[in-house]
Amino acid sequence: MSYLAVAVTGVAALSLVNTWLIIAMARKMRGQGEELARRVSRPRRDVGLPAGTRVPEFTVTTMTGATVSAEDLRGQRSVVAFFSPGCEPCHEQAPVFAAFARARPDGAGGTRTLAVICGGHRAAGGADNDAARLAGQLADVTDVVGEPSAGMVAAALGATGFPSFIVVDADGRVEAGAHTVAAIAGIAASA
Image (tube, rainbow, N blue to C red; front, side):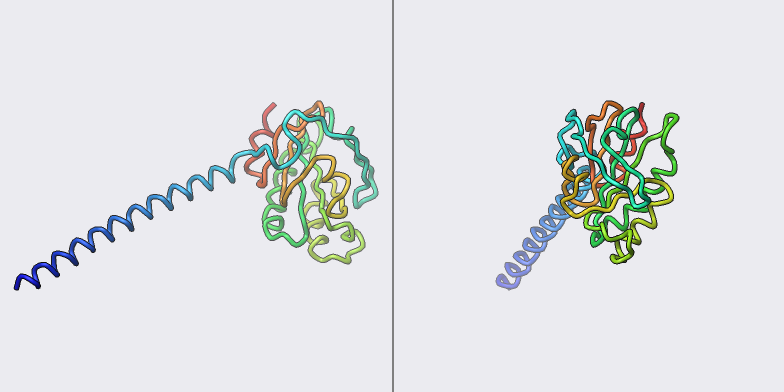
């Protein structure tokens, strides 16, 4: 009988330790999930040029044939969005950015927006279906530039990763950047 009592006590103790470990792991995972959500939702300084850096000169042609330069980003707050055709988060963020651009029309206190499809320079000719789909979602609300992956606008703003959204102030200096529209919306909307 004493062996049975020891065995039952041992199993009970092991069960308590196991339960405690499960609870501890669940708390740790919840904390990590909350930290990840905080990191994703806040503006990051490593998405493009460091905050305060003046955007270097560039001149590109949009898919409609208009010319856009670094000078066009000055005079009012601007948001430059970078997308890549093969990037699923880019396809998820494109309609969010389109709604953002639609809600803040260029000029008269609005926010200037520019969408750059990196690796989508063929989109104007329709050769790249993913790039053309991205361009189609954005063309009605903002200027769209298609350029090679290491294109002029991406190099000028130091864009890293996709999607990237970089806020440029009225003086042509980088304010912030993030990988989601939600993370930069508050900055872009402030005066």
